[in-house]
Length: 123
Image (cartoon, rainbow, N blue to C red; front, side):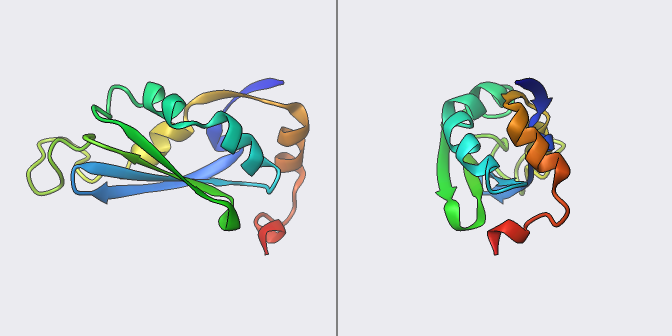
């Protein structure tokens, strides 16, 4: 096991949905997805994003693309047109989540680090 940042095994994108931010986390290898299902829960995300997200966190599973989608309710200070936040659209929320440290088995890290064609396994 190694303590690494989530970005080593996943990548992500985020944006706004009114007063909620939408954060997608995508596995870098097919074997990462089951690990994310088990370990990247809505509660874990809520705890990591507690300074940003004032509401609940919903998680949606997208197994066909090896991804998880999180909705962080009440995280944008009212939304893009009324918020006084510097990031009123939540564009930095994926990167904030990807900086979370997580314990990952060595065999999963080795697969991610040694793959040549990322994403080919999902075809």
